[in-house]
Length: 222
Image 1 (cartoon, rainbow, N blue to C red):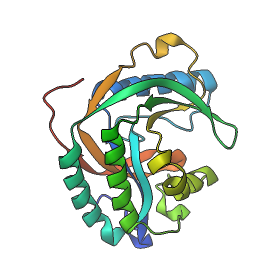
Image 2 (cartoon, helix red, strand yellow):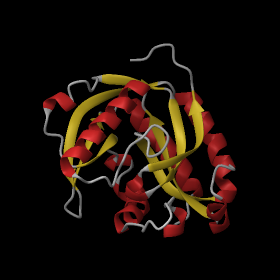
Image 3 (tube, one colour):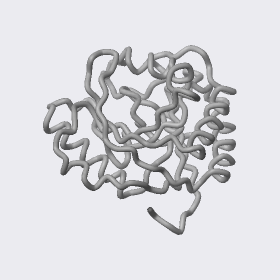
Image 4 (cartoon, rainbow, N blue to C red):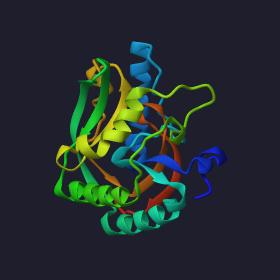
């Protein structure tokens, strides 16, 4: 998987997020709400985009040895062929308080049996390859950027605190609270995902870069 930066290959493992990519309509809406949150709060720690820090629904996180990344991609492709396209149901837009006291908004997704089954299969796959230690060097950081304890802790604790029975699917929108109803009025009740991506994790557990994309064509775009 040659898309990894050269210095990341030398480390031996990289922090990955295997995610569902929403359709363009939902991606663009998430970016628009993110821009409104930044404008209101002044906090631009998370700037969503179409090429980097892309909106997503996490299925699994972990740090995988570079030597196993090709096998991870191959097996992810097989799972994608099994489950995609997948229809997701939207619960609504919600704001939560993190352990550090910050307010973060997101689009909550209903945990349907199909989504839970996909999550668990991807989790089991990552668990087969993941190393136990999460190091700052495994995360995709910009030049001069400092790793956050939140990022390392969230990646390290994802398997025990955010998966299986604790899985809570969502699309992170950014820091701050969505207060204007018109910002959420266009959030659809459901949408169809036809893409799973393996992404290199950045600070704030953003999908900083897509390392591999696994798509199954869909005739219908909900």
